[in-house]
Amino acid sequence: GDAGVLENLVANTAYLKAQQMDRSELRRRRLSLSLPKPKSLRSQDAVVKQYESLCEQQPIGKRLFHQFLTSDPKYMAAARFLEELKDWHYAEGVSRNFTQKKIINMFSQAGSRSFLSFLTGNGAEALENLSEDNFEEVIGTIKEATTEFLKGKPFLEYLESPFYYKFLQWKEYEKQNISDKYFYEFRILGKGGFGEVCAVQVKHTGQMYACKKLHKRCLKKKGGEQLVLLEKHILEKVNSPFIVNLAYAYENKTHLCLVIDLMNGGDLKFHIYDLGSRGLRMDRIVYYSAQITCGLLHLHSMDITYRDMKPENVLLDSKGQCCLSDLGLAVELPNGKTVCQKAGTIGYMAPEILKQEYYRTSVDWWALGCSIYEMVAARLPFKDFREKVQTSELTRRTLEDNVKFEHKNFNEPTKDIITRFLKKKTDYRLGCNRTGDDPRKHAFFKNINFHRLEVGLVEPPWVPKSNVVYVKDMSDFKDISEEEDVNLDAKDEKFFKEFSTGAVPIRWQKEMIDTGVFDDLNCFQINGHGYETAKS
Ligand code: ADP
Ligand code: MG
Ligand code: MG
Image (cartoon, rainbow, N blue to C red; front, side):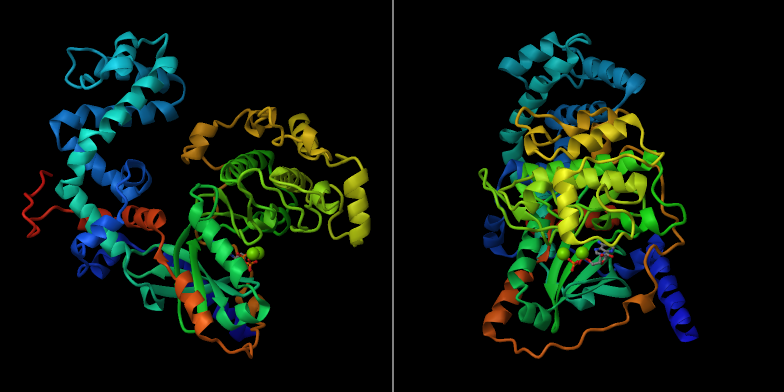
């Protein structure tokens, strides 16, 4: 009725407005914010002093280490060299040549101010011989030698510097307790097996997220605790721009909450079927498939099989880039382990699953083949759109039939990559051979520069409109499930506590940087611990 339409409009307006909040309003909200002191030496010990984690993986750590290096003339050249090298790595065409020349002039000439004079042995030799002809072969050695150098004395000095003290303050802040009060809540975005997913916003940073709420009693009744813990564990472990990030895990009285990157551009199924013309434009299909491929390769590199690859589980962000989401079926298979459990969605399941054979990551490539087919033809390889077909018949077709390409939009490279992903025998399937057949090298992806794609430098072919909510109306989510009549005991409470680990470091630190909180709070002051004010 009218009330429903109005309710939907109001909810959408609030949701869209939150996403366009201006900087000054945010500044006002966090005027009173300040960094805590690290608690005693014990908390310092809790931060494992590993170079990779402290200076490369954690975004705030990386920033502060860089600030430390550039504040010291001895280490300035090394810091600038690594920066320039990064630019070169992602540059294309003329600008790649230009950066290459610049690197040679700046860092390899003994007379230059930024000469890498600290290098010895192999590194120094490589630097001396560096030229435009051997650049690609030699530069790796120089980079490694530079990193080795930084891991030594500079790193130890950093650990004694005010920059590292600042890092410990941020780590202390990161450990704060998270509750409902930390967020504003907006409209519902979807419904899952254990509760709803809502849009939320962190009050003091303005960062938007999706909050997947898991009803505690419902979890217990359905025996979903271990599954949810596994989903959380895998979400926490992965770190790829093509897989949704977990930012916080916390609890309130009734729910466990997983706070995940907000994907406000809708899922690919919605884009294939619900926006007028069926199917997607080829440039979009190639782009999404490339990002999905990177996401799958990331999972597989960690011995994780996704098992639920399908357009419905691929969500678009506000820029039009896509991510894999819903890792509830993902399984860890370390040390060559295999499983034979039947899992996945009907229509996307590989022959080896249907035959209940042992499998590993091969099933994801099959499902990607099905998904590319669906993006082109708006139907599955073995099931027409809205066709009612029995599971046994679908299984038979999957095991026996050859895939047909009747839709006019299939071109040669697309047919070829799909055919290779849909090989019934995993030995012949693209992505599954031990001889390292890399799907990224297929002609279907010839226009994609994967280096640039990985760091978000390839423009998305389609961008969601900022004034559109790519979600079904509120009224479509109305059927609220009833309270479950189970009692929670001490054991359950213990489980909920263990689940509620608060902020996830890498994602949280990224939020602090992206929203400007890091810059706002990072000015160096005399801090009562005997440190000098750092040069700004
Ligand atoms: P379940 O594992 O219970 O199926 P999902 O993780 O698939 O739960 O989430 C349920 C629905 O919520 C999804 O189908 C999607 O519509 C929506 N949703 C989930 N995660 C996000 C997100 N990060 N951003 C936007 N919407 C989301
Ligand atoms: Mg789901
Ligand atoms: Mg799930």
